[in-house]
Amino acid sequence: MSKRPNITKMLSDLVAKRLTTQNNYWAAEVNFDKNTQQNRRVDFVGFKPLTPDYVVAPTSVELGCFTCYEVKSCIEDYNSGNGLTFYGDKNYLVCTDELANELKNSLIVWPHNLSGVLCPTKNWKQLRLKIDLSGSKVYRIRPASEMLWAICQSHDYDRNGIYQYSEAEK
Image (cartoon, rainbow, N blue to C red):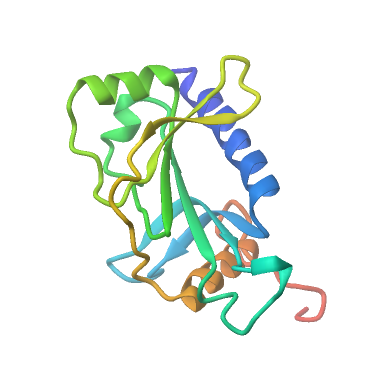
């Protein structure tokens, strides 16, 4: 159990690295429906606007792609009831090879909107698709404006949930 925080940090660092290279905007610990009974937090949310031929169009935001990542370090973490919130166009569970194999062998029912399971490479340099679940199309049910607002809000809070005022607001 003592390795759990280290594994979570290493997996989270790989997600951050992936998001930095593949998305225009992203944030960690993104809250939805805050201050309601439906409050949910997604570990990471990335956004890439649709820009065919690198041209920004009025629909670039609405037709863009949101990707959600949930990081799980062990079976207890997976079964904890925390997380596994997937609101994106693509949704990934990020875990170790061992946990992916354990989940696959246990014949669990995967969340219906899960696109796949990502695991670190042997040298822990990047994530790779271990289990592809993209056979059924996933449709985002939240509007792009809400998803982007949640990403923006997560940048205004520190890790303790305290609002960080900008210099202009002070």
